[in-house]
Image 1 (cartoon, one colour):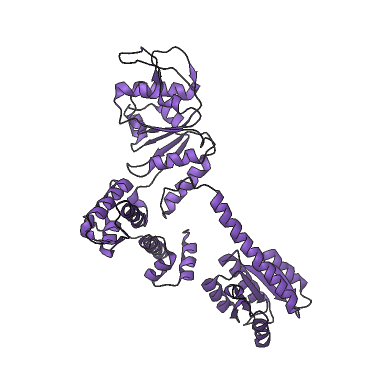
Image 2: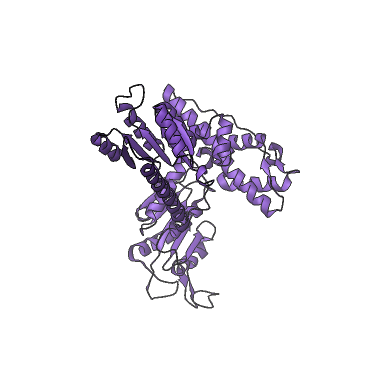
Length: 452
């Protein structure tokens, strides 16, 4: 029975005699009690019980079912996985059916047999546990294609959902974002979530290779095509056949190569340098750039027809300075990783370091933060990283608050909650302590603000 006592059961009943009887009958559970709607909601938010039994007739008007139905609706909104068993009057079939229609698990008419209610409780608990286990198994079975990405920012989370949706198609994806925002990580996510995951992912940086070598790198060459071409060599496009090719910094592609790339995208065949044979290639293209391609088009430095071939799906990645709470969250993750790599043991960020991290604009984005944390882990004297170890200057916030009072309050709450979650390294209990509220209250606040 000790294991069963760990399972919380909430009994909502305003009749003291019946409440006492139910507590005695179900003492094998951790019985929680409530006598009205407000106290019942407090218990649900505090304990999230798997199963609830509730009377529809609750004060202040016990002869009416309005308060009971309000409570049922609020429980299912607050804890949709909770199994609610409704207790009704003997000839109250209409309200019982209405409760089932709203989402109640089952109903019992008073007076009822305690043994039968006990069997229903066991089935409800068992169903709840099976559903929880099913969710855990599904989460384990489904590969996390963006496992290397750490964020709580709503905008970047929307980007992740977009990546997951478009990955199953063969549409060309264009990733726009500043240097260091994780464009290659998202490109690999597109590949891993697609049907091409078993084939190669090939990446080439168009800005890192001299113009006179870039064509041979992309399209390959035949033996003897030029001085030094001692053997036939396939290019990156051909190497990625069946898989995904990432063209990083596509804005730096020379105009001559833009025309050749456009022909490949239209016909899906290539010719190696010095060759005459057309080679069909089946490859998914993902390109990335930090430049404004539309401005490059106006300046005559990028082909408009190539842009529209590449921009079938455009995804804009927000910079780190625009990702609320992510700087502190990422800093914690980098400190753990580098402390482990450097055999420094457990290391933590002090409050002054966290404040500096949150205030810095991070022009180099995640890459700059990563390098900064690596240097701090190496240079720190003890197991606590201070602002001196990081070497950052705080930057004051010059943004003006919105004039709408409700909007200002909601945005302020959202910023503080996200910052607390970031500072607490995603630990909801610790974040609630920092905010001075209970864990269920924080969950409610996160739900209201649209945070997951």
